[in-house]
Length: 258
Image (tube, rainbow, N blue to C red; front, side, top):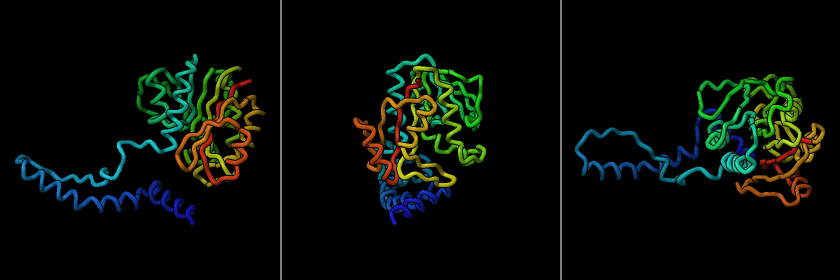
């Protein structure tokens, strides 16, 4: 029942723009807004327009519990410490991870969708990573793909429908990385399934085997679960066995190219 409620909430809030929780909290803020308005009006004589902001009283100073926030910071710190020659990103959030990295180094990004804005420190190339490209062979010594591979082949972002899109995508990404280079990957993990057309959820053990077949060897593993805490694994085999039985977590994999 809990999963049904979560799916319904995601559908009405993210796809139809109706956030029931935000709406209820905003209604709750109306009395306080009116009280503050009357108090401010007593000491102010200029033009006073109404533009109610009713929700912010019930929020923290910033969003730090979102898994995107945690993964973006986690991987960006690793790249800063590693200081690679050339870092390339595929499909990660521009207003999150890419912005983090661009604050301290140049970064190239590949995405199937266009990016028209000119961003300092960011070089954009439109590309479909399900299609192989000889020009990108051993292109960089550092590569990232955060919360993107799970969408390949589902058509959500205008990509071609392909049930094996994630396989082709991962293979092509592996070819981009130079031998000895590092590949940072994050995807949903848990009980393997497709939630069409939102995303895939990967069995982490199956993903490790697939990556290994493309020359990618696991170096580090971490995950973010429903508690929104990032845990660095000390025993990846046991942890991934346990996580593969859960409904959902976000797996963060650091691979090295053989």
